[in-house]
Each structure stands twice: as C-alpha cells, then as structure tokens.
Image (cartoon, rainbow, N blue to C red):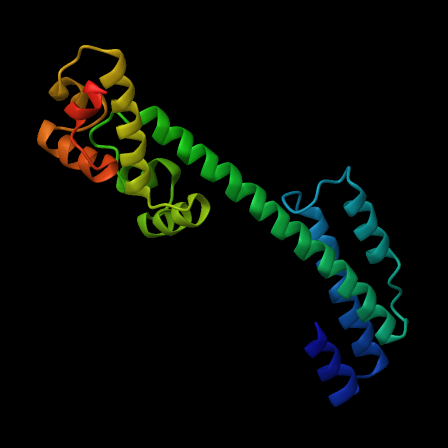
Length: 193
C-alpha cells in the first residue's frame, strides 16, 4: 500500500482523474472484502467500522488522508483474517486429534488415511500436526495406543496379543517394540505393577 502511494503520488505525481480512479479501486477492494463473509460477519463492530471507513473516503480527498484510512481498513482486515486463520487451525487440529483418538484401534490408521479424510496433503498434515500439537503424527498415534493399552493391561485379562490388536497393532511383536520405545519396558511388566 505504501509502495502504491509513493509510486503514484511521490514518484509519478498522477493527475486528479487517475487519483480518483485509484482511490475508487482501493475503496472497491475494501467493499469486496467486506462482502466476503468469511473475513467478517455483517453483524459485528468490525464490519461497521470498516464500512464507515470505506464510505468516508471521498474521491477528491487529500491522498495522504485517503491512504491513512485505507491503511487502517487493511490493517483491520488483515488482523481479522489472521484471527480467522488461527481459529480455523485450532478447530482443524482439534478435529484431527479427536478423529485419531476415536480411530486409534484401526491398524491402517496412518498419515495417508487421515490426510485423505481431511482433504489435506500428507506433507501439509505432517507439518501442521507437529506445529499445532508439538509432536509428530506417528508419535501421537503411538502415545494414544500405548495409553489405551495400559488401561487394558490394568483392567482386563486380555492377552498381550489381544491387547495389541485392540489398540491397532497387527502383531504383538510390533506392539511390544512400540510399547518398549514409549514406556521403556515390556508390557507384561506393566501388567504386574
């Protein structure tokens, strides 16, 4: 925005007609962004503030004043967009984690299957998941499965092999290795505690 101002009013010193077109284009941009309900709802104070800014920009104003108003409007819009993004990311992270907690017992639960379900690329999901949760996707699945296994080890008479299958492992050997990595000892030792 500052480059537009300097290029058109300092470097080139555009005429009154061109200035009017530029100011109209900037005002139209603000109004188009307001029409997009995904940025700001019409029943909010921010919407009213932005609308007041857009409507208070007359065509023949002093460019410095116009660009100050437009800058204020764009700052509000950018802050709202950032806030919406954070809110969306938080909800998506919660939805993914909830899905994993419900589907942990599926042996084919993977980055690939979850990325397909949520319409994300595997690479994006992997980076997003680590950023939002502070652990890798696979570490999270393993942690949840081992925690569920600990409950079964304490509260059931199921064999290690049955528990392995119940928490999403195809073989008891794979389960034992994962358990030992996570807990530092064999699952049968936990059962004895």
